Length: 209
Image (cartoon, rainbow, N blue to C red):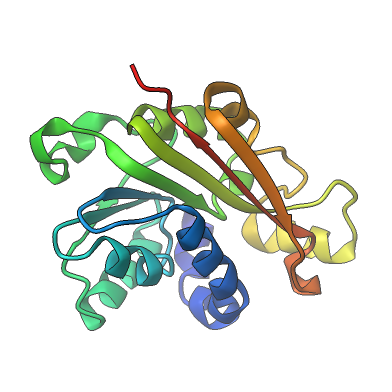
């Protein structure tokens, strides 16, 4: 993740304004409520914490996981500066993520009510493995959401986005979630040209046992 450690130095300045409306749209569709446990999978510099943390309140908790130490350092700084006391941050890979790594942040060992993967799956060639790992941590009846840039016909800007993010925005990164969830919904939101395509919001509910 050396590139993302470097990228962390200018990530917020480059992209925070661009993606903020989509982070807000994601939070509204997650139907967040006080007291919930939320997993921010691939939290990066913590931009999504701004919309997740206040929604679950002091009785809830947001656990952010990212492999890049540079990104996590920025996320910790953000949380401290904004007084987001219900946030916990963990360094780790979504490809190998297990409940044991997060036990200290999960009351009574329960799973998450909500899980959000924002602009991360397109950067992981093994996105189905990552999606399955996150899915395992969601409580029955809980919701998982994947938000990412996506296009079926890639142009020059899409190639530039892929190069900068070390990603492939042509991937159907919602494919695993679509197979395993109930009430699956896929939305395409028009995005600025600089995104390289649309913003896809995919969400589904984990079946109750």
